[in-house]
Length: 152
Image (tube, rainbow, N blue to C red; front, side, top):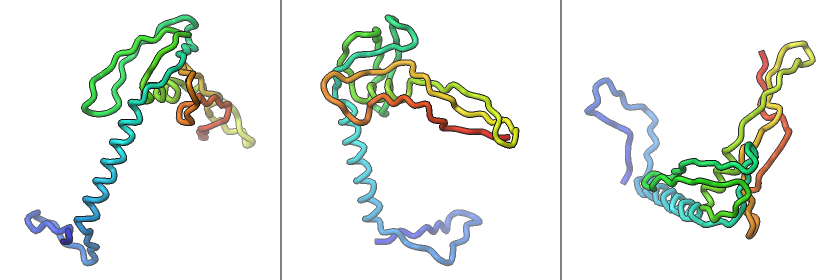
């Protein structure tokens, strides 16, 4: 069975000359593969990780936040103390290590004398150090590389 992108009931729609039909079976197969991959990632994100929470902005402070990654899950509230050991899901650990930072911009002048704006460094607000084993996904990466430049 072939699906053709033709809708005669839509007023003003003209059928293109060169249509490439897409087999329905391959479309369903791709959807099934994506659903399987999404389910694998969802289960992987539920893996519990032991580690120590570090709150870089306030030494000894407390960070509270709500977290929801997938539709259908319930919103989880977290209250983490700096330096304490916790067992958290991998999705929360990845969020703490990858998304909790902000850029510090630098203004400079290029060789032609035009002003340029760049990100000088990324300041980490918090991180989560794994105490069991190292997973490549959530190794905190600090870098002084210039990542964005804007010229006028």
